[in-house]
Structure formats: structure tokens, C-alpha cells
Amino acid sequence: MDEQPKVEWREWGPEAFAAAERSGSPVLLSLVAPWSPECAAMDASTYAEPRIAAHVNDGFVPVRVDADRHPRVRDRYAMGGFPSTVFLTPSGQVLTGATYLGIDGFRDILDRVRETWDANGESGGSVPRQIRETDPPGGSLSPRIEEQMVEQLLAAYDEEFGGWGVDVKFPLPRTIEFALVRAREQATRTLEAVQTHLLDTYDGGFYRYATERDWGGPRRAKLLDDNAALIRAFAHGYRYTGEESYRATAERAIEYLTTTLWTDDAPGGSGAFAASQAGEARYYRLDATDREDADPPPVDETVLADRNAIAVDALCAYHRYTDDDRSRRFAERALETVVELIDGDGAVAHFAGVESPRGLLVDQARVLAGLTTAWQVLGEPGPSRAVADWTLEHLSEEGPLRDGPAGGAGLLDRPLYPFDYAVEFASAALDLAALAEEPTYRERARETLAAYAGAADRMGVEAAEYATAVARALKPQTIRVGPPAGSDLHRAALRLADHEAVVVPGVGGETATVIDDESTVGTAETPAELESLLTER
Image (cartoon, rainbow, N blue to C red; front, side, top):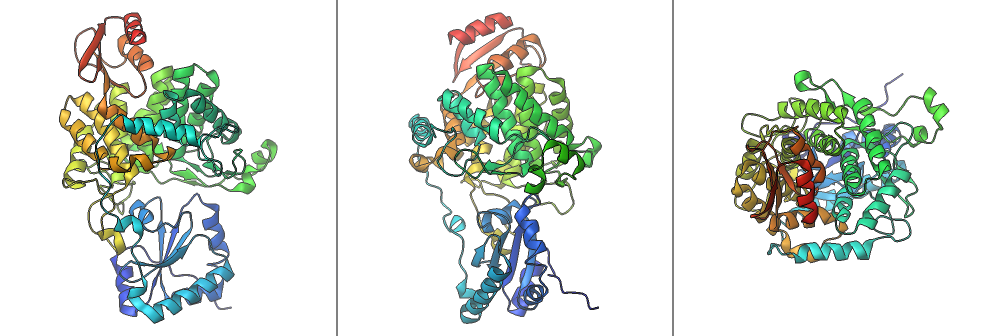
């Protein structure tokens, strides 16, 4: 019997677009995520249909891209979910796109794209808005930015069910952290909703988000970065409230990370965290007894630099407040692997593998944040300055931070200025300025934040990290500890400091100095004196 045709997927790159140009055919870009059940379903149904496969192979240049491994492609072409099914001209412009498509819907869109392409050719494509709008709305940094975000919290908060918004509920861990010191009841009720509805109490780990206002209908994929960010939020919640359930929830999620998501297949041999676990609803609907006999959803063991750095940050935050030895050990091991992905100049490889892109802002920012947090908690600076310096030299060019080095297939040769990653880099640079005693990093962080200040009055609660960074840039809080990391005075500073302050260990001497902006508040020689000083402050 003749073998049924299958879609002949190509790798993303100039060869695929050159083939489209030579043949005069559109490109079919399939953006997939290993953790998405819809991606697996579309492969099993739509792309497995022989006539569709033959049609795609004959009339298009099909390209398959792992969205987690190639964030620059994802950020330019994703259609709001995965799979993203995007039809492109040979120059990379978008003809049309959708997310999941069944067999009938896919046939319809193939016909429409073919008609559009035959009628208009290259002129039928367009450049996505996020690339066309290349100039962020700059402005001045002021305390009003933080005030506006507090107003946004009040306006968007769901009094009935917790969280923000009255539709899909995302946990928004950085928004929780902002609220912990400005609207604590909102933060704590949201933490309680997350631990009640999004924590897998059997296998551990957090689900991605809830599809319903009351936190029902969870989307069950478990991503390393989502889990790590929530561990950090619960750790900070424990610091401010002493609520034991917050500590226990963070610990349960750490157990998931260090078992299910831990892989020894990492550069350097230290081990690292895998990228994600798929969200197969069928498995997660089973009760505990049936789960024992079922195969768990697959784990994508790709070692991503940015997600491992977030995990290092989170484990250090938990160790900061609990002295937990397990979180420290795994943070140190993952950090060793992350450092293996940094070259001698400070450019970070996105994942462990020869085909990995290098020098992406998402990695530069998050790895810098992991390094500066580890410096504060563990006392090791690592290549923090090299990562920051490479980023500022290669991704800014006296302007907003680009998402990666210029050049690449499709629209990768056009600059993209991602707000979220720029804010993360600025926040980490503020930490580095205090740790390295180098004010240049603070100046560059302020410039980065000011590039978006003109839009501050239009930012929703999802941008709370921006308001946090602006507040820290305008009035930095620092505790400089004379004794080295691990000393009683250092441990006290970590436990007692506001989570937005920077703790600098091992500066010499026997005292700890509390500094607001550039003014010394006071010094302390013992943990008790430091507690009194910070309480009075």
C-alpha cells in the first residue's frame, strides 16, 4: 500500500524563504509549543489528513517552529495562542493567520490564501503592528507612575473572586508582588485563589491560568517560568504575612520543579530545569488512584536559559526567607548550567544546543536578574557585568532595547522593542548598580524605563512590574552588609528587607548600613539592631 503523504516541514531560515521566492509560493508557518494540547491535536487531525498534506506540500512552503526555542519568531508572528497558523509572503509579511484549525477550517483558509496570493502576490502581505510601531512613547519618570498603577489595581480588582479582571484569570505574579506592599489584601486574596484553583495538589506545580472568572476551567500546562514566578510571589507573600500556607505552597511547587522538571541532560553536568510539561486535560481529570496507573503528560527537556534563570531567582527568594537547603542547592546547580550558556563576552545562548540563537533580550534580561539575585543571596557575582555590558553595547544603540541582534529570515531583520523584557532588564540593572557600586547601570536603567513613560497612563495591571521598577529607580533602597554572605547579619538583612530593596553582602566591616536613595538611614551591628532600624524606618 502506498504511504500516505505527510507535511514536509522545513526549518525556519533563509533557505525556506528562498525556496518560496523561487517557486512563487506562500510560506505556511506553523508556530507550535510542546506543552500545548491543541498543537498535538492539530497534528493528529488536520495535518494528518492526506489531501491537506498533499495540498500544503504542493502549493506552499511549510515551516515548523518551536515557539519556546525561537522567541523572536514567536513575538513577531504569534496569533494569540498555539498553534499559530500563519501564511506569509516570501519576504515574511503576513497574508493571514489563525490559531487552531480543524480540517474544514483549514481547507477554507488554504483556498482563501491561494486566491489572495494569486490576485495580489507580495502586495497582499502586511507587517504586524508591533513591528511597524518602532518608537516607544518616551517621557519622564515620576512618582505618578506608581500612583497610576495603584489606581489600576483598585479599578481592575475582582472583589468577588480575587485576582484582576472579570474574564480569563491569569495569576500575574509580578502584579501580586507589586500589590503586596501597596494593596496587600488584593495580593493575599489572589494568592489564596491561585493556591486553591491552580495548584496541582497531587503531582505538584501550577497550571497556567483559569478560563473562567471564578478561577474555574484551568489550562493545565505547567511551564517552568510560570511556576518559578509564582514560587517567588508566594515566598514574598510569606515574608510579609508569615502565612504558613504560602510557604507550604511554594515548597510544594519547588518539589515539582526539582523532581518532575529536573533533568541531568544539561551542559556542564550540573543539571537544570526542563522547559515545561504538557497540559493533557484527560490525565489531570483523573483522580489520584487512576493517576497512579496512567502515564503523566510528557516533559519538554529543553534547557532554556531564561526560564532556568527565573527558577534560580525564585529558589533564591525562597531560601532568603526560609534558609531551606534544598532550594539553595538546586539554585546553585541550575546557576552553574546557566553560566555555561554565557560566552566570554556576555552573550547568552537561548538554550543548550548548537542551533540556539544567542544574545536575545529575553535571555540577557532574565539571566542578569538571576545573577543579581544570586549575588544578593548566595554572595557570588558571576558574569553579571559581562551580561549587562554586552546587552547595552549590542542591543541598545543609544535607544530602546531591541529583542535581539539585527538580521534573520522573514521579519527578523526588522527591530522589535519588547516592553516586558526591557523592563526586566532595567530592574536587574538597578540591582547591579547597587551590587557593583556602578551608577552607570542605574542611569541606563532609568533611560530604558523612561522610553515607555509616555504610555504609563494607559498601562493595565499586567504592567505592574514597570511601576515597581520606576519606583525603585526614583528611590532605590539598599542594605550594605559588611560580613560575607551567609553570616548572621546578612541572613537577617535578607529576611527583614523590603523585597524591592537590594541587599549587598560582603562589603567589608562588621555592620550593616541602610540607605534610602543616597542618604544613610543608619547602621546596625547585630540582627536585632537591624530589625529595630528597619522597623523604625
